[in-house]
Length: 585
Image 1 (tube, one colour):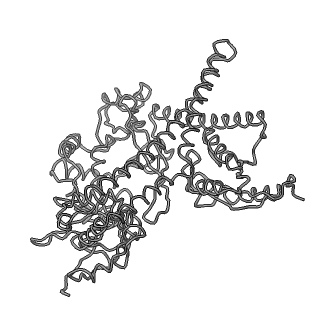
Image 2: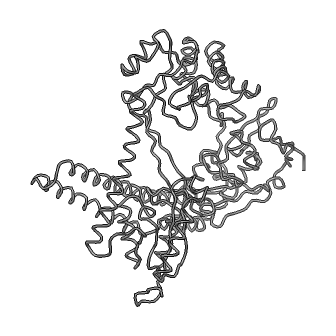
Image 3: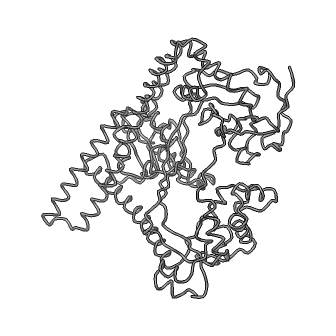
């Protein structure tokens, strides 16, 4: 008979996590974890309240939808234990375990894992903490070995194989070097000739290749000017003499090269990719998570040059092409028009991407449209959202928003609700979280001082001291990161309050003539302060969210406009988002 320790059945949450998208797609380990947890819960006499999973989520962050669900359930009360197969399923960082244990403990809930070695005694907690630190040390050691192995391999003159090689090359049989792809390299030669010799523009090359159906490196139908720019600027295609290469690589690598040949340079260790997971709230108030990546360029002296087979592109073509585009700047799609619903205000209701702008010039007249950014990127089959005439949509959005500004009390209620929702967005009390992390910082400082005293007395080896200080520094970094996140959240609430006061003081209650005279730039500023989100519908409607509580749906844009626009191209022909024909109503 299952043991209940004399207290009757207790309620448990089963939590399972896998860390990669590949594992999430195949279901690897999720079913196994849940099955083991169900058996353990049955043996211990737990009533299972809910089974929560986090497919494809990293344990290095607390920003996980499943974990947020667990924290919400625990905060609601009545949960005795959160069960996971391994402690690193809950979190990989000991500091995060500490935070969750404190948070759950205040609600009468404990975290338990099937691989727990300790108990609730001080000795058991010490044993658990030591095991967490050892597991963290093993992960760090594995990551460091991988990093150093790649650096050593690059210094030996070998390619570090990623998903795809540079266009015009393919990997050799051992995947540590490049061999020429003759057909693709002909396209590379043509790019440098068109730009460096014939003085064609990046856009001109793109249009030419798209029209001719020249195959791209990614297999998509259309080229992008960014891809062409990257090819022109990549040193892998620039011929370097033996003497130039000799000054970039080790003598051992140089000894293997032919002094009579030229080589390209494949650079390793140029950038550091910092990945984080952040949560966002969509137009329906639902929380979503996305992975963000910040690329940091490393100092030039840290780059490692790997010589590869020469592309065969003449040096003068490369130099001329780079000179031709060196002063280029990314051209804004807005042209000379200010798009007041740009910058994330207008969202495609079909796929959730932002709507972007597009202008079509026909004879002496310009037609301005908002189109899904997926369609703008030529991925037309991925989204069914039609384009919308800007001169039809923008006045209608402003009519509704200006009507709200004429009712200060309704505006204040909407903004106050937004501020309250933002304050309550975190799973627990931010002040309490900040206090916990500050205590963790103070504890790390005390432990560092204690370790240093032990080392000074000869009771701890300096190698061991270095490892412990490194672990403490990592904990301090996590604490500082979490405190910075809480500070950012508080600043966001304060900005909302300032925007509320600005709207009420500067715009609310203005006479209609004054509101209608606002410029598109001023309207855009108002939309941003209102946190306005206009979401398109496939049937031609648009729903407004933000300080407009509950959403306001437009009538069909076609029937409310002065002209009736008939969408005459279901295949998104030329122009790329379809053609509208005007008919008098």
